[in-house]
Length: 458
Image (cartoon, rainbow, N blue to C red; front, side, top):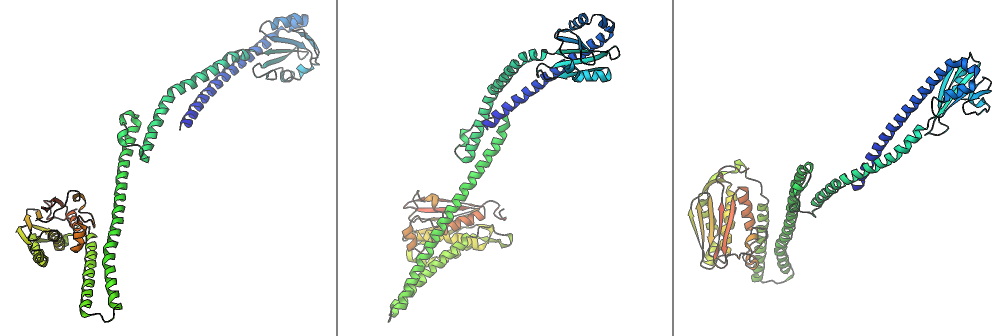
């Protein structure tokens, strides 16, 4: 860009100089025309002196020549014989007769021309006229030296003007172009990510660039946000695939192993066969749970109006409590349900939400502990006095397949997707979920539905 700007400045200077030079040429041409007119006027005046020309042509030639500097006056006959010359050069006049001015005078009575053979800066003006009905020819020639003298003064002035214009443009344009280029370099760095918006001060930019810079900045912020979102999404997809593969591969490997043992071992006792079948059923159930939970995760679209029904979450909580009785009796855990919460929702969504929260509380509960489900206006909470969650794990517990206590989750048959499913359901209904937990004391998950939860969220 610097080269282009310098080239533009140089071209502007050259164009200016060309116009100045054309103006000078026009002025000089006008000067030649004026001298030509003066020469014709002298010729017309001299044509009336024919009487004197016959008596003393030499004196008359000198008299006419004295009317203008560098004027040469020649009297000659139509056959080329020179009779008188103001410069006393009596050469053969045939060369004068060959000039356009003399030929025009012999044919029309008067003629003139401008000859540039003596140089572009010193043209010769010629004029000729017949005297005495074609018996005599008067020839005037005048070499114009004014152009040369003028150009001696003009050319240094032109070069000085060129240098002045170029230096002025260089002096005034250079700071502007350098600042503009520096600002554009910053914008390019902003696009490339090497410059942060905090490093740029819009007030230092030209007013014409500020609005564009602001638009570019907003677009870059949006682009970076989208790129971060895409990157996080790709990371989550990669983790999801890895974790899903692990969750499905482990029980599948176990199922294949026990199936091969049953096929290869001859005379397998009924007790071992029953044990192997139990392991296969257990791992198959685990795989089915993983698949069902993955399918639940894909339900990220908001519920349709036709799917919503008026329901009391207390009734759903009681149903979940009944389904968890075998695990609760095994660990001696009591589930308490208090309060009531009515809203319009999809029954399966509320069942999955309460089932995952309450099942988690039971799985991570302590022996002879409790799980308390409290329902209130647009709010439900599930509290337990189990092992709790350490603070370092709290920011990630809603991630897919994330386990704060991996060993206990696997031994309890968990898939690591329960809280992800809960977060997805809450988001679909426009609600929020919050967790308070202390390691060794228990956890409390609180879900808040919006005030307009009776309507379908946008």
